[in-house]
Each structure stands twice: as structure tokens, then as C-alpha cells.
Image 1 (cartoon, rainbow, N blue to C red):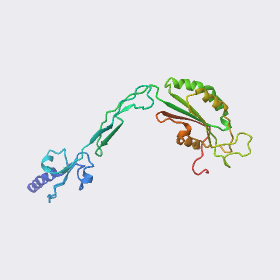
Image 2 (image 1 turned 90 degrees about the horizontal axis):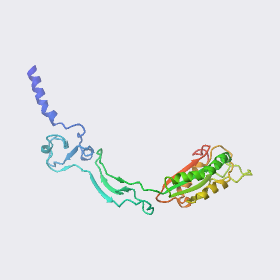
Image 3 (image 1 turned 120 degrees about the vertical axis):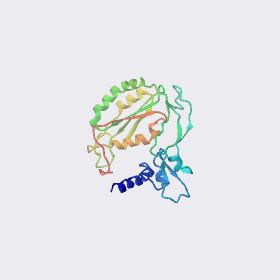
Image 4 (image 1 turned 30 degrees about the vertical axis):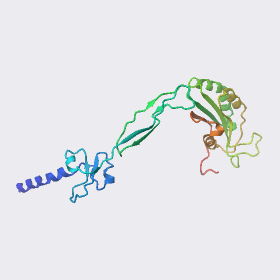
Length: 261
């Protein structure tokens, strides 16, 4: 019985060598070239069972795939590469080069891109302080007024190109969220008290003058105000090229879908 067994093993050896490596056993060009090491051999006259999806890492690859083939290569090109901005140039801020590239990468492959970055001194910074205007935040408002000048001076150590703004939110100005009988200032959703400005003294004064309001329930309309501060760019006076920061201060939760209007 041993000779037949020996003949069987020798006969199966060429079949094992002909089988391709794992990952390249595909029956269509589309699925074949999704693997980074696989190549699709067109061979239009091939009427045998020889696979067309082959691995370029095989030693016999040139012999088995010598005709037209599909083997997409990575492509990289620089579209925009302008000089980096000089310190103080706030009109056209460019801190990274190149600014725009075109890159075509084969699936599951990696491609390294070299970038140059230069941190520009005195980069514009817009800081908007959004505070809960309910009466329970009165002590926090007083604290913000007292540290407002220190906040501005501390930020100017990082950048002299600084703008500060101030806004207040309370709650949706309808029942049952607010009290319509209160002697305090009528409740409001959001007020842009001070659009962004480089006048830091105006910031502390507006914080001091801000009046609080009352509402009925514990959650506030903070997200209503936050959305307006983000979307209403012209009213807040966000600059196009600046670091934009919103400080959000509240002592309560917020209304969300399912809790009312």
C-alpha cells in the first residue's frame, strides 16, 4: 500500500504550489485589486482553470502573469503650496504646507505625506463666555466680573490678538418653562450681550450690568443659546481665521428632545 500512497503525495504537490497565497483567491478584478499585493491578470484567451488573481510576491509571478494586468498604484500630487505666513500677518494665515494635495491610495495600503508646520505668534483668538442667566447663578456672575480683567491679561500672555464676548441664556420664554408673573426681568432664550471685541473693559462692564431672570423648572435652555452662538457668526462677530472658544457656565441640566418644544 505504500507505493500508491507515495504516488498520491507527489501528484498533489504541483497542485499545492499552484494555489495562490491567502488573500488573492478572488474571482473578479474588483475584489482582487482590493488586496494590496494582488494583481488581476486579464489573459482574454485563457480557457484553463488557472486563477487570474495572483500575488506579485510569488516567485513565479512574471511567468504566470506576463500580459495585460490591473495593478493600481498610489498617486500623489501637490495642488496648493503657498509660503507660510509671517508673524503678525492676520489677513492670510497659513501655518501648514502644503495646503492642498491630491492622493489616490489603494485599499489597505499606507502612504506617508510630509507636512511643514510653523506656529504663528499672536494667532487670533476669539473667546465667548456664555453664562446661565438664572438667579441661582448670581454669585457666579459676580465672580466672572471680578476675574474678567485677569482672564484677559492671562490670555494676552499667549496672544495679543484677543477678542472677548459675552452672552446669557435662561430658558424657552413660554409656559411651563418660565414664570410670566415674576417681578424680575422677563425670561429670554438667549441674549448676545456683547459681541466679540478687543475692548476688555467693555467685557467686565457688560458682565457687571447683566440682569438675571427666573424660570420654573430646573433644566435650562443652554443648548438653544449655544446653537445660536455657533450659527449666528455675524452677530457674534467670529473671525474667519481664529481660534474659537466658548466657555459655557451653568448649574443645571438642559432641555432635550421629548421634554417639550
